[in-house]
Length: 125
Image (tube, rainbow, N blue to C red; front, side, top):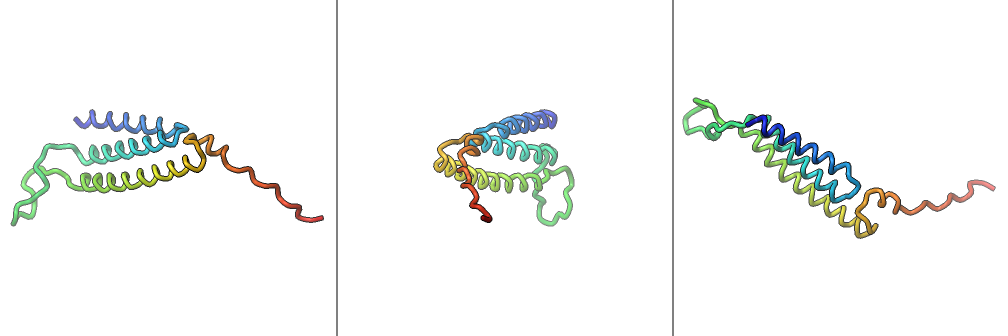
């Protein structure tokens, strides 16, 4: 099961890198989201996927008597999902505003849409 998820992580990262290398801002943002999901899945796989008991100990017990699930990767992934969603909405808003002001979503065309700097005045006569 772990090998299947490791292959899935590789596919997510490969698709994300492909999308991040695109010229379209929307594809770049989708690549960033897919990369975040791939990293979250990587953290989950690194935390060992087991069908063990939940990490809740009964009252009065100080140590588990058998295998339990590791709650730390799950907590890290939950935090990363919230932060990733906030980052995606912020970057989507920036992309929309840049599309409104420049009229294009192409990164190369945005670079060419910058105004030409005015000529410098003479420094001496």
